[in-house]
Image (cartoon, rainbow, N blue to C red):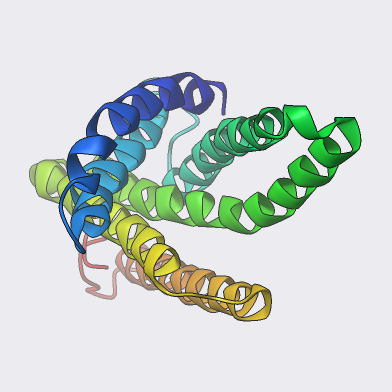
Length: 213
């Protein structure tokens, strides 16, 4: 959690540096920015916050631990990102008085509360594949890359949709619930498939490798 907060600083710097370059590209600039910068960078720093302290530790002893560590990293990243947005909103209306500042900050906080679960799910997905990689060392590299790519693409897809589609408040909430719900189901299905393969192997039933999901 704390390392995700720390590493979020690097993501913020890179996003700030590269965003103007992509915004100069008509129509598809933001999509390219999300696909090539935001998704890969933010998911990589969250992944590093799992890989650095936890991966080689004794507490990381099942594939599902990767999901848990990934989710916690996502919470840390979302916490500092949301706080930054709320403070920015508060400071941007400083001339309007304290009441307006509090109202604006509160409205931003409500909106950002809907965004946080996405960060948790994206990094939980990458964490699942990191767990698979740990227990499938022969295919470690491709498995890790697959997890990061899936997390980054899901992240970029979410950002692109909410940036280009003119949602109302109600439809935005409905979209977030649907998007996050689908991603949660995908993760749970992957975990369930892994558990099935694992128990099949453990019982000597000739199940596939845990790297299968």
